[in-house]
Image (cartoon, rainbow, N blue to C red; front, side, top):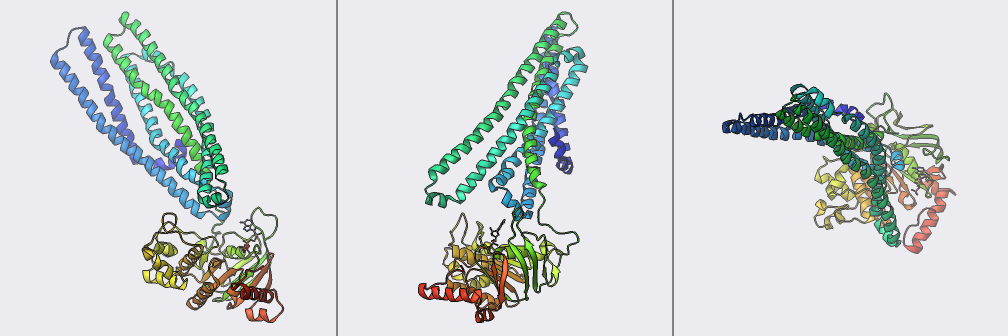
Length: 586
Ligand SMILES: Nc1ncnc2c1ncn2[C@@H]1O[C@H](COP(=O)(O)OP(=O)(O)OP(=O)(O)O)[C@@H](O)[C@H]1O
């Protein structure tokens, strides 16, 4: 039952809804006492031959009225209690989603997408059932039991009530034991479901690779195994589930047996009349539901507890990247300074960057060159605070990026990552993602700068064409250019392009860079690339090798001396002449 205490924050916030629901439920219980009571009276009158047709009609009318009233009240509490559980589910989903957006890349490196999806669907569903069916069953069983037992004991016979209810403590004990077993098995079943979810997500997103490598049979087998695991673990849950009903039935049967045996004996000895015994057995019948409900309750609550624990574990996960105490919410644009003695990724044992001391003037076009794995992306991701430094600092206009809020920092940055994200939405919505209030003219302007406007106009519905999973599939180059347009729309002082033009041809890349140079003169442009040609017009080139800055300077000064840059320039020019294209940095 601890889950009810854990969900206390929600019940307190919605106490009116729950109070009204429970009051309605209580009224239903009281109304339910009327028919058995009247039936007992009718039986007594029948035995003593004191009944008339008018009396019978009156009794029937009262029973009908009580049932009609119960109908309305039952509808009312259902709306109240189930409505509450839907609100809880929606609140939990909101919290999870908000938390997911705040967590850093390290978290996503450690958690699988399928598992996170399972938390947001199956686990939320189990908690929703606890707040709906669970609360209902608890309130209903406790109220019915209290009202009916009190009436049986005070209005009929205390001794008989005590005897008939003797089997109940046995049931409480047995059902509690089942509950513990159920909790463990349910946790395992949910974990297996997470694994399955994860696999489905991976297979679906990588279906082209699976097919291309002819791995369908192997994947199908793997999926079958995982699916079987889910089934086996859920069967283990149902084996416990299945114990609840028979247990409750045996105990209810035992109660009836005791009531009839002792009650019959009392009627024979005239300490109870036949009408009272009839009412008593009918009341006992009304106790069957609370007893069954008790079993359901444990079942629902144990599932809810297991799922709530899984959700809480995620929600208490602290974002590795967060605002430092005293962080201010403003940051002026200006020159960027990197002062990094060493940086290693969390959990990695070797440094990725070493002795990186750099000064980047405001408004400059800066090319960051280096072979694959040399640390270009890391340099950019540190500026974005996707990861935090453990030594050294990065400043913008003399202010440490750690002394300002993440919001203020990211407001200064527009980022085009290596892996593009295209949402299932229209082209226009995808471009306006970071700046939803942008006008259509602005969207077209940035699309022209990113050289994607012509492609978009060729789409069936132009800027209103659906793209992403449910719409038109964009080529790699189109995705890159759309991502650039999206970044350009943000009024940020620093534009960060991480290998963002690798899928477009050299001529288009040159045109885009030229456009960016002219349209974003007051913005700093950081461009990580393998292509030397892409940075021929840069103000500053930074050459990285194995995590160290090996050369810095303008392209002309670097070309004038025997630098790594000039060597690569000549090589790539040569390949360009012979193959008609630009060769990557090697
Ligand atoms: N999240 C991470 N955790 C651990 N190591 C990482 C992580 N990201 C990158 N690395 C490692 O850091 C090194 C530098 O990677 P980085 O992505 O910065 O290089 P890069 O120059 O941008 O390469 P590329 O041109 O291929 O994108 C690589 O050895 C890489 O394996």
